[in-house]
Image (cartoon, rainbow over all chains, first blue to last red; front, side):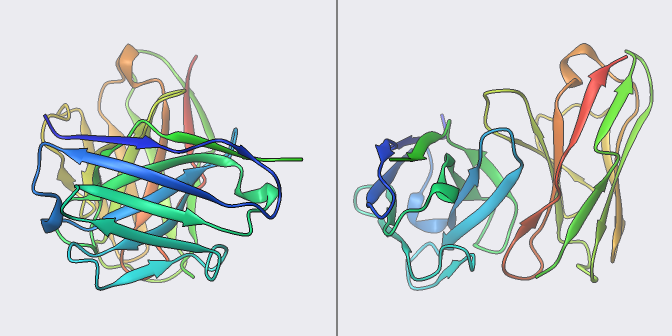
Length: 120
Length: 107
């Protein structure tokens, strides 16, 4: 079964750091681009970042550029999101999502999400 | 950035109704549009990709159409399981952007 499982969400103070992980199973992880998408409480979906299957290309939303870093370890079938200088507006459920084919595509598989709360 | 605008924001309908949701892009995105369904507390689920291609396993009562800047998601006969929120998303140009969502409620 194709599955994504996020972890690492927590309560963190403004200015703090957190690393999210997304463990993949049931497909050839290195063949697919992966993304992080977030959803603030009661709000809509917002794309955060993506990375190519090989890890050589990344893209970021302007709101997180310079603060967040996406990466992957294909030997461990795991996607990461390093989040630094966290702000209250980063509070959200963070989903990892698999691209249908390459990177520039719809998201056909989603994890269950992990909650990040930024508050003092 | 490409802005995606959905209408309506909320839709009240009954089981068996034909439902149409519209998504407009601020510039042409060809057919690089997806539709997702999301239920409370759950992850989104892909319904339609490339504007009109039905994702495997999705019931045929869901259909998508459009190209350029104007797109629609149609549910031909609303079922109890379809009451949820729906989002469009463009993947033509970075940053990928979503519509604000349409909540389909029971009338």
